[in-house]
Length: 145
Image 1 (cartoon, one colour):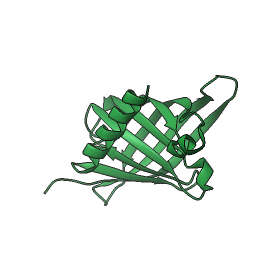
Image 2: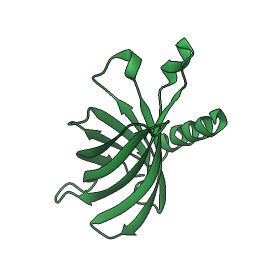
Image 3: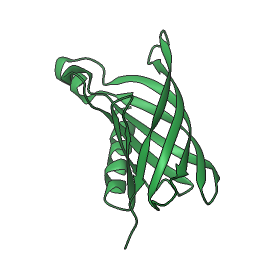
Image 4: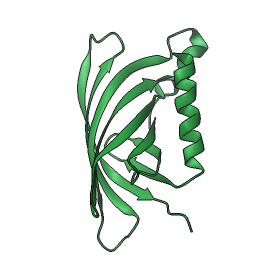
């Protein structure tokens, strides 16, 4: 499991240096860095902000665009939520799993800006607790020059 998480983390890091996007979901206090969300397959990493250090969770999500249109993309993907700080006190790094279903629509008059909305049911790793998360925010897609 550690090797899978490491591979996902490295792929997100490599994607951040290429054509990438950054999103902010203010109601959830989440910042997201992803590869090119206009491609058929892309990877997203979400980081908690405005939280205590003991709960700095990161969600790694490989996504697939189900439908790509000129103005809007519909996508889905599975997420793995990890907290690398848990390893400092011998707790499990893996926290849970999520399923993401969302849409990114271009904002008129700002070519690289997108409005993002997602539904994401989340479950702890033992599947004893689950919540329905929703994300609403803005994403900026950087473009190569």
